[in-house]
Amino acid sequence: MLVVCQAFYLFNVKALESSSLRPTVLGSSWVAWACVAGLTVLQLLFIYAAPLQALFESQPLNPEHLAVVTGAGLVIFLLTELIKLVLHWRRN
Image 1 (cartoon, rainbow, N blue to C red):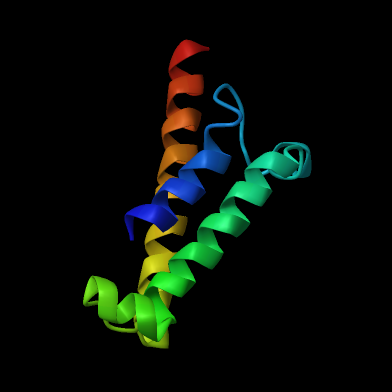
Image 2 (image 1 turned 180 degrees about the vertical axis):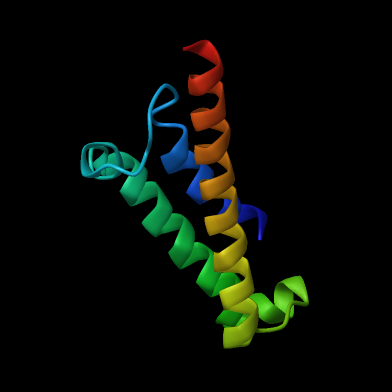
């Protein structure tokens, strides 16, 4: 869950003074997207590759768990957006 929340937070803090819900912010860094893609591949290998499951003594996640993890990342993203909005209102 921590990995997914950090990925959502990465895109949120790219624009600290304004909303990150703009194509110019979300699509502006191919490096960030490449890092998140690589991170996702590694995380999926950790979760679903049998040799890594044996090495780390992990179990695969079912779709419901993946939905909860993704939802948590989305909540982090939206809460950070809300905090930026409140701080912007307080400054003005």
